[in-house]
Length: 135
Image (cartoon, rainbow, N blue to C red; front, top):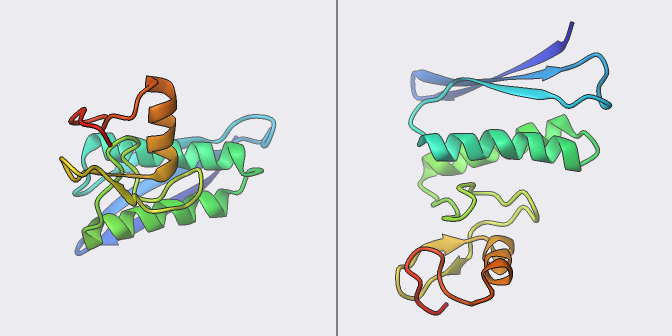
């Protein structure tokens, strides 16, 4: 039997909901994050947020509260109109908790510094991942 943390986030009169299942063998066994209900968020962004919760818990010494705080911040900023990183689809970087601050001069899409530098390293170039112009 697993313990559960139910997270509700109200958006106007609608609610977004996730459940974090904590197994009895935690931290030896990974937590499971279930997306129950999303409102006003694109599928790719929602999946990225769910994965960021799992990643934060796995890589931050099991800090479930920090992972849920990151989720809340991403949701809040999304509904305030802050644009997500065009690479990882998150507003707050899982790596360094930064906002997307590196903008392409051509297409004006924004990226987290850690995401764009990883893109440059793996693509062996310095072009924008979306419009392919030099960054």
